[in-house]
Image (cartoon, rainbow, N blue to C red; front, side, top):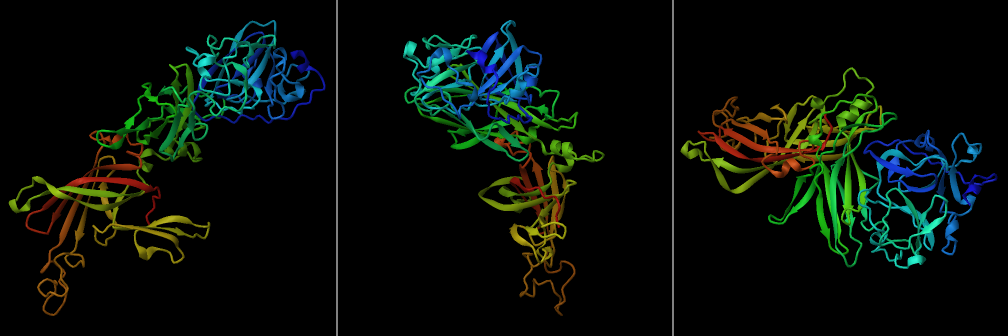
Length: 588
């Protein structure tokens, strides 16, 4: 009955099946084809933009896609003629076929089923389709037969009865009345009468009848926002949810990170710069807090879900651990991996692509002038950093000792640091961010270290300040975020905030008998604060596993030496943490 699909006068609706170039996360799906009719299902979004490229040089006579919006197949249809009439199908013919002008199917996509007609005289063969992995997604038509495929493990496929055991609207216990059909090479439906002994063939499609649309696509529903976990150049965290839809049975789920294949050599695809360094959030029941833990390539995360339980897994990309990579072409590069989710003793297998981009690699790809490309050193730490210092140790100057003692309570204050495009860091007492209109454009956000420099027409003004530092010009700091920053704050003897200066006490106003201010410290003292911020690599704490650590979050040991308050220097020590809240590298 399939011969009529090649007949004249076929009316088929137009399908613009354009397949956009994939950017990352590559896997290869093997599709086995036999002479005659084949029902196949794709788990990957093919990199090839056309069916001509997918089946180039192969004895494929036609490819058909059911346009289910305009047709359903009722249960009373003869299983020997499961397919609807010509108008309900979108079809592709090779260019060598005289009727190729009738084709209205141009590309193939993931989570879709197709009928492939192979030359009856050809030998069995396999086609390797490279593309992006996709989670299964179906549009079920209730009270009808649906042509669908399933995420089965090629080395350990599930049985039909196990796969649908928690799907009430699909009955696998009716024997010869089961509405489960595989497709024979002759185009006739073959009822699956023993689902408890029949495995689901990976990459194959089946006709499945349902009384209503199933609530869940698979017995192990996996949900991420979007088609993949794409962190881009900005995002640091994303969630994945795995559900146990059963009301009675537990489900053990395993998630592991595997390497992505390299992208196809032909096509405008991003180069693979390496694996995506991931962490995952774990609750520490002993200390009652959440910790970031590195996700080790190939090592699974496992959890047994109670009936109806959902497992929310938060993943974060450690941008500070990106492997060094220099693109060899002009397409740019990204870090690419795949998350493999398995359940039901590994018989059900899903894959999710993971991608992250380094801002520097993106800049290298987009910059037209390649004579002076940006480097990681120029851009790594630029921007505005705001955080806190917590002091917990101080020396005992009364005994002329430099030994530090723990304090009875903590002292905390805010720290503001700005780093320009060259890597020069400055300590600030306050910072203003404002929208400044420009003559050439509508305007832009800018940073100002002094309120008197704010433009008169500036709007959306925000201020951040620290009461622990005097009103001062930005203090230039030596060093870098890769090691330590050091600087000195001097509180002049005549500074209004000097603790020794008393305006109304003639013994401490630093003025002579004629009320002229002394230019040097006569009745008051000059206070000096030597500050050292020693950055930690995080190896002694859990901070290193935080996705933002080393990129938009940093910290370490804070030390300060105060002189001028008393005869002996006062030493204080604690910890500090900084977080980048803006990448604006110009300080006005």
